[in-house]
Amino acid sequence: MKRLLRSLNGEAVWPPPVWLMRQAGRYLPEYRAVRAGVPDFIALCTTPDLAAEVTLQPIRRYGLDAAILFSDILILPWALGHGLAFKEGEGPVLPPLRGEAGVAALDPGRLIQKTQPVMETVRRVRAGLAAEGFGETALIGFAGAPFTVACYMVEGGGSKDFAAVRGMAYGQPALFGRLIDVLTEATITYLSAQVEAGAEVLMLFDSWAGVLSPRQFRAHVIGPARRIVAALKARHPDVPVIGFPRLAGILARDYAETGVDGIGIDTGSDIGAMAGLLPDRVAMQGNLDPLAVVAGGEAMRAETAGILAAMKGRRFIFNLGHGIVPQTPPEHVAALLDQVRAG
Image 1 (cartoon, rainbow, N blue to C red):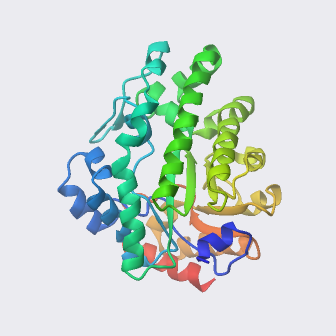
Image 2 (cartoon, helix red, strand yellow; image 1 turned 180 degrees about the horizontal axis):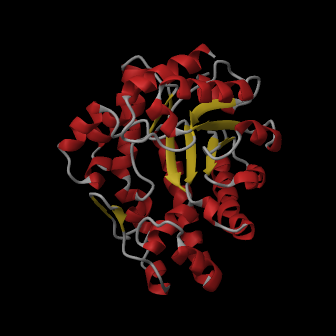
């Protein structure tokens, strides 16, 4: 069994398996060369030849224990018919969804057809890993969790505090609940299709979970995650699911009740303390600060050593506490991987 799958299936593998969030991306010169020829980001995500190439690039360079599908969490609302554009210097831009008409316009009937290029990418990556000699590298499929996707849809893009989405959750709970329900069912369909195309592990990114109050967190983060995991386990009982409720803090303990096989720990949490809160049946993943990798040297070595010492003997996957940043020197990533692999 592949090392990542062993960790997610109950084994304290050591040295731990390692992959990095956003490992395919702008810090790699080979990615920038591909991106330069494709000015539209959505086109890059939905052109299987290119998306598969970008997914495989960090595996060829570093031999990581997992490849994660190159895509974006907002491909899901795009596939449901919600507008989406990526603007240089702004990030994603969407029509702000603020009323009944916006939710009613979402069309789950479009989802399978619009995401066929993504599924073809999954098939090509799975075949490419085998063909290029990376048979021990697991393939991770993913989606944004309903709350985080709703954040971008309601706000119309990124935000410092996601006041509009939090306001809708409090002030228009029935409307917000319908939006979360639509996104939850669509997420189940989308992730299941990725498994059928060849994904071996699934990851649910709830990047903005931590902006919610504990009560709202349980309703809009834990509730949908529980439904998604239960549905996926019913369809694909052997495919593990990793949840990433970023900024959840102590509420990660409650998130473990969703049935996930692993939980991603963000940079702001003490991973040793979190190990005492989470049940042993749940693998932990994390949580090196991406800026430590930018710094490299002794700072990166010390942070990495502390995480490894805290996690030895536990089910653990080494990763960052959030995505790798564009200014990261690739040689620092290589040094980090050497340290992790030495245990």
